[in-house]
Image (cartoon, rainbow over all chains, first blue to last red; front, side):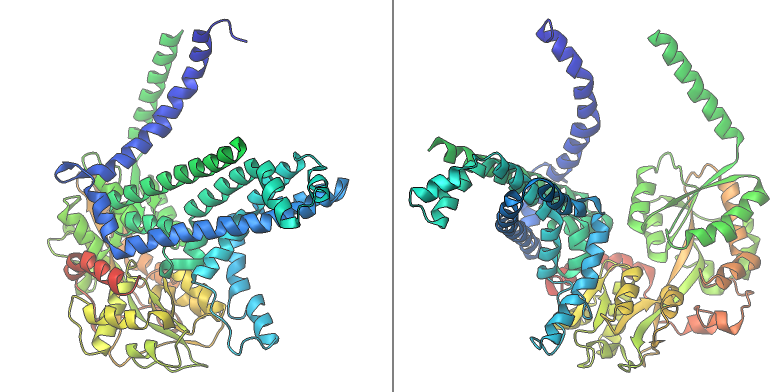
Length: 275
Length: 340
């Protein structure tokens, strides 16, 4: 399209300069603070951070919840995507519309809805006590369970949409062919569907995992200070303790975790395709 | 072409600066709470009176302090309001300058404790509040700070987080209740740690607390009196406890930025804010309890405020330097005993 490579490069220059000046540079400065200590450049802030038992606990909790949410979203996502794929024409479009609808509502509103649903006199506790499954209302709010439910509901649509498009691209007779050749349903899923839809799974998985890792409002409202996550801890370090060194350590951890999971999922995808 | 554009841009900038200098402008930094009322009762009438413009910056204290510190050499803020211990932190950092009270005639009308709360005239108290426990009188009785940990309130009480202004002062009162009110707060933090699982949450904003009360999630929690009018509006059987150990509280103060560009206007504004007329109006709107001793309000208003010299005399306040010097170690202690 362009007569020379130089011309093409020149055209990308303004955008590149803009991104470098207002995004890359500030991020580097922010992250750089994590390596600055009283005695010059060092990993001191990182060592201090991981020496605190609370910080280790928060780090592991964030990782655990992120993975739990991603795996649960994948399981529910596949089931939902199969149902949607089996629908024809308008019904399929309507169903996808319904799945996407929550994404158009602010996460704050969605999270507040959970406060009411999960509350002592909320829908879930009313059902539990009504059915005689529990004498006392169960405490859901301000627990890891509440954060898990909130995050799963927040990011499940992203997984479903990725998997629906992956399943749509899968050859329609692949499943029937496998069945005819004697594969059971588990084998069909594991050896046929999963390899053929792995790209959708990688995209969905990355979106859900990074989303859960960086969501602030949901853990803040449903977990509170009793269930600190890395992102709520980051806020606390900055706005309460004015401790920008720890905050930039946390920011770095979040960025590294995001890149790692993305690389890992991509690796899984390509490793399988080589077989 | 580019040169011409640059010239034009520079000319525009210069013109804007000249215009700015011509208009009288006062930049203030305040709490986000109740801003619509402040605008109506304080800012708008003052703007009319002085023929100037008030630019308002809001945010939590730490954000605002950080901003003041960042602009230390070229301050954009002229005056700010904050808690007395944040004001002490600011004065230690050299961000603030002593206030020349001779330029504030209404200073003489203040209660004595509000006249120079952190020493060296670095701050003037403009409002204060009591902190006690609110509780559902149809469910429980609360007569002591220790009752927050009673069997009846297990799973039904909330506590302010250590990071809030209410956190440390509530812990101080718990310390009194369990017979150890040392400033290190170790005993009360351990007590809260023991009861961690039976406390519903450690709340960070009074609005969150009000929501929990409204949804019947909690029956009791320590809270500042400034939230009382909103709690009373819920129309629920909620009462303000008078624990046998007494109540605690805090004070909010005004400070003057060092090198403030509009210092004279800031003095004029402070004097206006502290006047009997404005303090009465703010009290009647239930925004702030008055620090001006000449303010008289009706009983139904006084009931919703922390009103009168006698009330304040009985409050068990933590000194600003105690809060400031111990904040870090309290947070560390809390993180090891309560947060995990």
